[in-house]
Amino acid sequence: MPESGLDLRNLRTFVVVAERGSFTRAAEELHIAQQAVSQQIRTLERTLGVTLLRRTSRRVEITAEGNVFLADCRRVLAAADRAASRVKAAARGEVGTLRLAYTLTTVWETTPRLLSYLSETLGQVKVEAREVFGADVGQLLTSERTDIAIAPRTVYPSGLATRPLRNEEMRIALSSSDPLAQRKRLDLVRLANRPFELWPRDMAPGFYDMVVNTCRTAGFEPELDERAGGNTVWQNIARGRGVALINASLAEQLPGGIALVELAGSTATLTYDLVWRDGEGPIAQRAVQVAAGLAVGLGWLPD
Image (cartoon, rainbow, N blue to C red; front, side, top):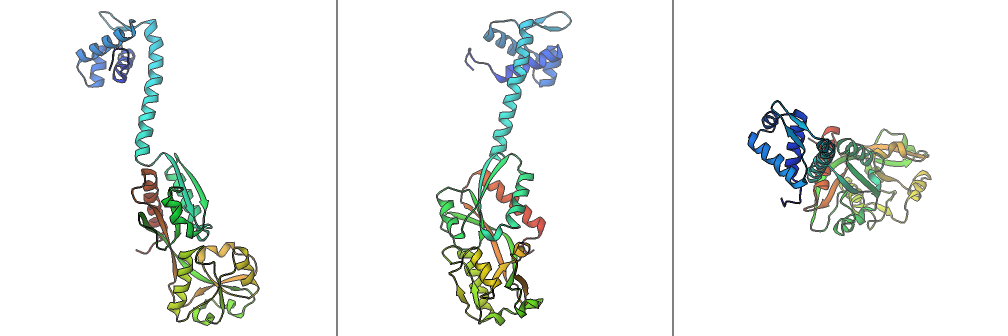
């Protein structure tokens, strides 16, 4: 350190000597030689140009100037400790801001559970969450306008990493006045002649592909009504104009006139992935770890 500067190590030594009233006890507490303690205090007094401590035959007494300096030293050292603690926490991904994007399918259960768990686990991380279309996730990440996303599984540009977060069972959405709505379970093939209400693929590629592939697995090519969007989908279903495959967590949020029926003999699921940039910073990496722990705890993924 230059002569005009103050070494935090010397400040800490001064505080311990002042509080213990002894160079010997200070040396024992700091685990350094008593000579080193004396040298640090002399350096500090020489730098400041004042006497901080008076040595007597029995003890060390603090001067009036030393008392003033002691109070400031404690504040400086506390601030330094906080700064060191925060930078270490930042390196562990436990301090800062996380920008999280999520899609409509995760709104009612998956995203709220994750946000709550992130708040509990990473209390010093501010999460800025916003709903987006699945088709926009890749571009938002590659352009660094978001840090991490939750979206139905699909193909992403190179440079993006993914990790499964949840497999959610699918249900058949029908008009509650439809005779088939009274069944507890229903074979999807029974709906082969019905139009399926579905958002266009250029809005929600992962969800779109899951619906189409589930129908094909059931043995038919679905007739798709891709003109609907938003509340129009629910209106069409409620009026009996079409049916839909939706994720089970939407059950308690459906508008009136719509019933959900389980799929018979099927394990059709919608997989949500966490998506982030390769080499992303510690906050995103820590959030992925936390989310993975939540998925295990809630049984969101198969064993």
